[in-house]
Length: 401
Image (cartoon, rainbow, N blue to C red; front, side):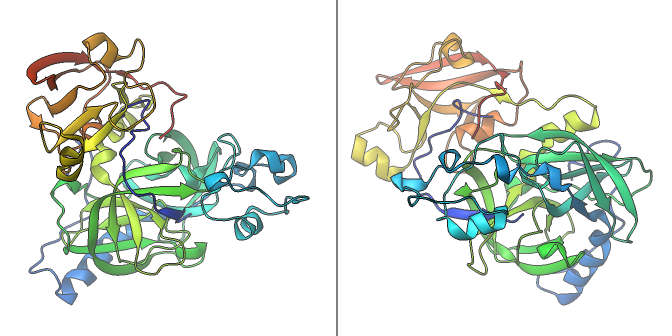
């Protein structure tokens, strides 16, 4: 959901990273029976890995899903912080070589195309798989390799450019499917188990760690289909490497809590996963064979905390400050926010009665709804409390981030 045109302008430190190359929605079949005792017991870890690994697959996108390096010119490359390419710079033959030559934070054109070898997770026994958008790239067809070595043809049925989720469908029945967990209840320190295909060479690899942090916001370079930022990520020290992208992050109950997505460059022990709750609305759409759509408000905001409230003399210590510290237009013309009467300087303090704060920021709250839903916004304006109703729109396809 988005918020702005959504580059939500959450004023947070930028961390550049490399993309790691019981919703039980009705009809889902969970991997059989997990009953565990206290977390940390080695038997728990073994049981989770044994029960869930069959639902984690390898996905191979064809080489054509990458952009053609021969068509890339130095002028197509955007470097961070105003840096310039050296005079006479020549484009190498491979994307990997280009990444070795350029500083972290470089950007390629949005239509360049990404893809490669990654991982995926079966979420429906009839063949629906969730993965990352940057794994499938701009491919229409991919190869899916099951845990038992079975090779299937997969069709890319949808890509969510807002969050970097993607869906692949295979023609099969009775596949082992995971149970979706609840990422909103996660706590730092609880067990986290990643399963995927690191480096594209070691399928069904498992790693054990903990949830190290929550609600992380990171900058990504090179290959994201979701703009240059990913928000609300789970941080974990369970090993995540290239090839793990699109793989699974499980909790101690064997439930899927995230899709592994990125690693912090060459830093061991710092990996990131997209929380599964972000995917639940579009999983429902995918299961119903509907096009992926995300709700849209149409504001740029700054998330308020105690420090910002003191510095800017704001009347509250949490909320979404419309416009805030951003120099972008605060309210997008003709957007749901505009039609609802939101103005620059307004502070949204709650959505349908749920407070807007660090745990429940505005963009994440909006993502829980669908286009066309009516939401009630509690707003502070010049010291007065208001309630405004907004009818969520469908996020425009040309918006990233």
